Image (cartoon, rainbow, N blue to C red; front, top):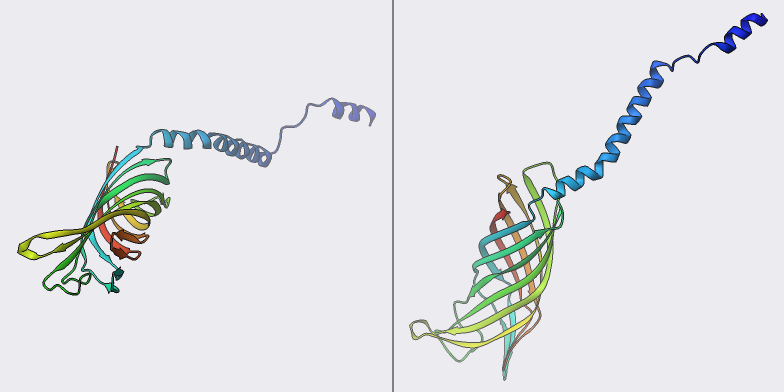
Length: 230
């Protein structure tokens, strides 16, 4: 008995069971992938095409606008008109994009609402927004890329009275604070080009054109977008 105990004490340690070896291999593999995660994310961001350029033609309409002149006040409406927006962007990472956006929004009225004493006069409003935007792209493993965004900046506004073949007269211009929210979806055709559909809401503070005062304006723009990445 004593000899047997001595032999057992001097034996080398038995190898681990297969179950323990399997668990050890999986643990090492998991730790290896975890340690490579930040490196892979950095590599993806390093290969990212940082700059974007967008061209967005569309249709825009404005909610009724209040006005005030000496001796008269009220509200008026304008017809939907064409719009064109341009944006230059820089990608912070795969999901966040900052943009500088501008464009031209045209609103036409069928008759004059600002001057009730003149007939056959049309009021036209032109707006040029200049916005800094932050856009978040929803991360999906798909060619479809939904996005949301917000922006702040300024809006140049011009009001003209159009007398038809007799020409037009500028009522006034101003530049006031503006803000924006957007949403849409793009389809990534390839790594350079994407097509999409976008909705923009834009609001401004009140406008001052000398004796004419316009209230806050709210416009809605629906556009198709062509986005280039480089």
